[in-house]
Length: 318
Ligand SMILES: NC(=O)c1ccc[n+]([C@@H]2O[C@H](COP(=O)([O-])OP(=O)(O)OC[C@H]3O[C@@H](n4cnc5c(N)ncnc54)[C@H](O)[C@@H]3O)[C@@H](O)[C@H]2O)c1
Image (cartoon, rainbow, N blue to C red):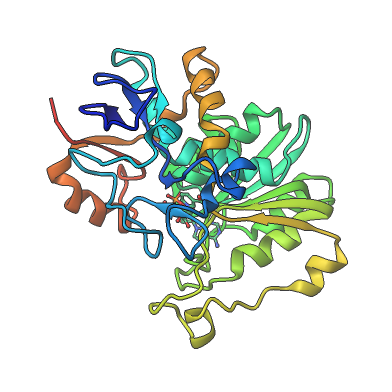
């Protein structure tokens, strides 16, 4: 997110001085997938692959967005204009990635008013997914994690925190939904999921969801799974093959949506919810730091240190 410093000759709708927010995806706006709102899977910007993003493995030649200056391809399509000034600065920053990503999870799970939703993962993405479910009218939202400060934040927004190092989350949630399980489920953890003792078990959250969500329910998976991960705990997982309980999944008639968030499908509406005071996703922001402190902040974030759950970096610190 930032201020437009200069525009190229092909740009029609943006001018120097505009405050804009950019999706983490880079998209053209005119390919088959973009035309259908699937901008996370653009066919133009990264030839031979469906999807481009700033600073992301195999997603094109676009350097990362956490910089003083950023070159924006297809800027008319990608730039989301924000009101001038600096109001809602940290809320708008969440529009680049996690707010639309959390919302995307609820969209794939088709969360509707009055439903119950189990969100696995209380990181920034899981927390805004829970928040999005509440915005969509869910009656009961559970957030499963084992980090107490993250569970506290979940409770602050009206969700029920479930600490998986203290209780079996499937049992706890089944019991609190009258033995039925939740209508919907969200994976906001991905392949780096762990058991309560901390050891990585890449398929555990998917399989927990298949047992937490009631028959015919729907699941939105925004937690990351990759086809190649040299650091994975076993050979199969290193090639993206996980022991996924298809038997249980089929038996219950579950449906599941996956993938990178199509940020452009939601960021305009979510921006307007921020402007009108209906949404305040900055509740996840735990710290704001100058860009030159990023390496240290990343290390602390990686170690899940208290206070580093979501850090906003200021390229030009005041
Ligand atoms: N699909 C997309 O477009 C998109 C966009 C942004 C982020 N992501 C992905 O979303 C995921 C979450 O992102 P984040 O920034 O919140 O990450 P994070 O690492 O801060 O949060 C993950 C949380 O999951 C918890 N966890 C680990 N094992 C668990 C288990 N078995 N049950 C329940 N919780 C468990 C961890 O304690 C942690 O708090 C990551 O995989 C990230 O790459 C996807």
